[in-house]
Image (cartoon, rainbow over all chains, first blue to last red):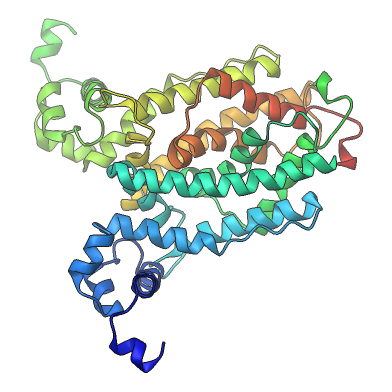
Length: 208
Length: 208
């Protein structure tokens, strides 16, 4: 930002970015309980009222942080689903682990901030809608990856792409939110292997 | 209960059962927000202190309700995994739908009480441990069902039973907690079909 830009009224996108940057740092460092909208406003150098106009509650702000972090999780399509799928699942797992560990100084099997975000979606209908939109977008991208593999003939033509992706992403969330077990690269590979051996084209699978 | 039983000191198991019955009714009728430990004690006809000694918070009581409800979800093993698996997944889906709808008068895509229970596990380490134990027991039973199908040769010998069950249960939780989509019999069948076509023994699956 130039000196003149700093003196004039900052543009909306700049304000958003400085708020989200401060909120992301705070959420990752202190977890959900330690995220304070007042402190975010102070760190971003804006009035609290400006922040509340755009993000009425801490829950709204937390979802915006997740959206910002997820936007960085790009899907790589090398044309080899056996490689791209575990890579993408590992990225989802890393995002979950980052949120699970937010604000913690030691290992803990509970879901931490991941659970708080799920609860926030249940508390506020509009936060729920934002979160579901966010996941719908991610699912659309992930399904496109699988659909291209179907078109290339790597996966069977009658594959239920929606159910398959629910199973893959779902297993990661299930371990983090429900059973408290770890998710990592090795587990992402087990999932992809289990799913691909089911999803890959095979002439006798219909006898299953 | 006999008259003399009512006059004497009720046995611990009887107190537990009347508390859990009252808590289950209240949770299902009013949802997590409407569950009040004071009201449960009153309905069960016991002193609040008696209730708090056994269930220190509403979160502890809510997990006990879930454990009681899940205990009724028996796994049927007819020896045909293509039949038993969708049946069992449908039971899990029904349990999730029951909790999702608790305390609601109209359809809502959010996870409701399912999300509150997940958040409760993240809030209290001991509640988290109780919930994880509960799910570990359920997973053990579900895996035994799959393992017997492996032994019968219905499923392939080198199946990753843990990853497979995580995927199946996980897809149901993912839709309820994350994407807000419905889970029902039809979806349970899609999951079982997608999974079985992967899990069923096949000579050429290793080429996938």
